[in-house]
Length: 276
Image 1 (tube, rainbow, N blue to C red):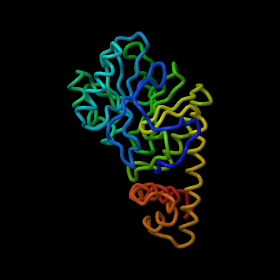
Image 2 (image 1 turned 45 degrees about the vertical axis):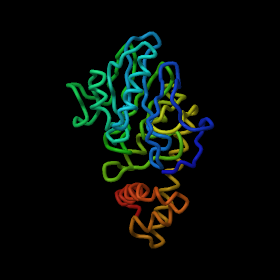
Image 3 (image 1 turned 60 degrees about the vertical axis):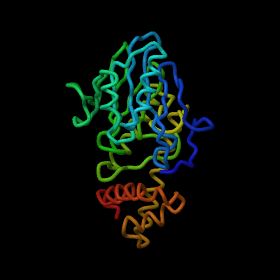
């Protein structure tokens, strides 16, 4: 929701193209904005000696960016063998069909409407293109179709918009639901405890070197915001717009429309749990 917050494990500076781990390389899309931070991170993931790579989130329909992703894979001596989507928002997925044309790949996603080819994605799936191991982790909440990808060999997780590299994300009501989002954060935290994940490769913003700290920050932030919304309602702020103006006064006004989506999700959550 804001690009001002520093997260645990965040390096200084903005997101940038280039290698992030042994297997993951970022190509930053030129679509910076208050909502996309420095732009969309398109990830090229491959085993060190593999001839095939997996691309996660080709990004917007920007011909220059899509060709830059293909070129980046080619410079490493690889061809793109598969395209994956974390979710269907245009800044992540709009360029997928054109990217599939450029690379001759299938596009796999949770939402059937986004797929190109016969095979989708489901929780628990393991992608093995080019000898890679990418485990599909369900992380709904930002959107219903949001997925993350666990990269065990690099102790990393690619989170799309579920966890950003800077600031916090929105729960895109009505498609996104707060209860599901909190469950997804807890699921990601379990990866840091049970599976040794240390690094977050986000859909926007810089890489986070303290995955557990970042997820813990998100959980605390959500609990605080939820309490603030509950208190605002108790104090007579009834409409989502009124709650936003009161609770999100510290957030840039250009982000208030997005904040209102999160507030609607929070109000729904509070109502469902009999708290308002």
